[in-house]
Length: 214
Image (tube, rainbow, N blue to C red; front, side):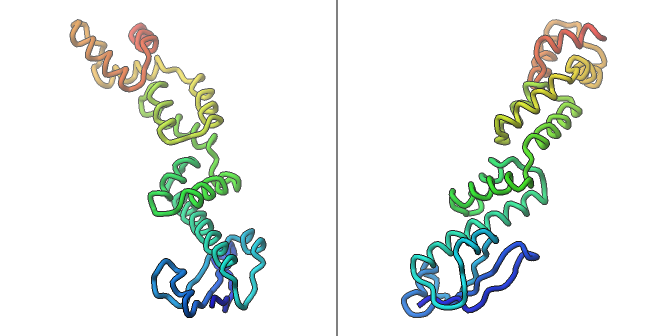
């Protein structure tokens, strides 16, 4: 038998905690762990959809409750991750999967966080592009790092638009001055310098423009 014995507010009012008691064969519904009491965390929309109230709970309703619990916990885990650093929806999904959440729960959390405005991929992608450009990275390297963080098409387009306003030859010239003082004259040294600059994401055009400026 499965019975809801208490319903109370949680997460500062952002969720409902359902306390259930399991007896007899239903104890094994917790994944084989012999627990007679279990708490379920629910986002408000799941609480409303399930129409929960105190009393007995059928097997099908119990499984729906367990699914809603995992999705809700994934959402709150995603919020905590965002408290440490900006993440794309794809990054949040990946990190939650690494933490043991199912694909469905992790994807739900990523989508829900983006829909609620807690993830703003366009803003975050542009901010990251700004930081990388300021640290002496070229456009190619910056776009590659954004792609590696799983930013979506809209965010990538916003970052690309911003990077179109950046003077990369000037940034490249600053890198040259910092690393070599002046661009090397020796052919072998020049090749090594060009290779190093290209690894930083500068194009051949950026490098030529930087050399002309010094």
